[in-house]
Image (cartoon, one colour):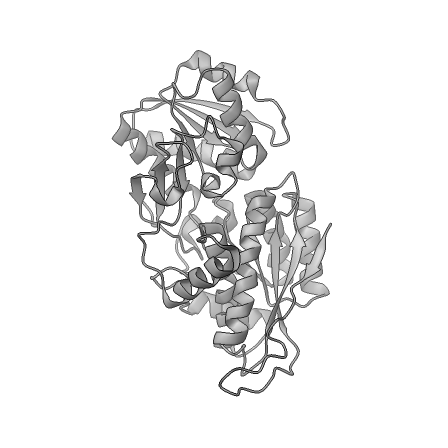
Length: 395
């Protein structure tokens, strides 16, 4: 388990306006992210970039919280493992006295942590976790700022209808994320009378060979393959489908936004074109003042525009800082109450609220969900055509 403490660049900073240097003890926000396999470390690093800049924003632009206290972000590597996530949450809460914990990327980790969080009482915010049970259990401490399974699958069905796809293979890892999407596909296909013929195939997240599963897909002769792998299995499925001749003959839809990352074309220089993929942010979207500040700071620091994982990592830390201010306290119960009742500014133009809504929409704010297509090798995701735009609400 690798554990690091966010440096406070603004701890002793005196602003150009002559504001006094920070002297108070920092308010700690926990960040649980995958930084090593079998988790998705690329996603973890992007979320961490966002959190880093959120510390800078809060401590300089907002001048801290509670009248001048700086914030710090303490980081735990979940490794994409439930037990590591739970242990990390316990440390963040008991040792570091975090006022809230965010950054969650793997749904199974978020779900496992919430079982402990409901007893310890410190809020969690899922940054990029979509399984329904994260919020469907209606735990007081559980919040999320991401597209949930019903929204994601509704977009998949809209996409299939638009493209005329009738036979669909859903190849999903046996995690809460993968099984959740597979089950939701079956449910919505029946409820909406979508008329799809579905093949569901599952695999272990730790697998290093998907050939047996893809041969079953090939025999099924689908119109579309939905790739519900996370991290290495996602990339493995693309490469092995190309080796077997499934790609590019049979279209493939990647279930989340991994293809927007800079390394996508390094991993798939020959078989990456033609892939459809989910995104949660488009450069055509209007950003809030916070989002505009972040985009400028991110470009300056990393030499590239931000992607959604970084945007949402930034937004969730900023939301927790605002919740502390609105609660006028670092007491975890007061922060939870503020999250439930407050209105917050994040990277998107629309405000963020966490309503006590029904089902998995409980304590959930979602960005729009987009489906894009790479139409040429080495294409920037910012130039990829948008095929579907689905609002982040119930369908």
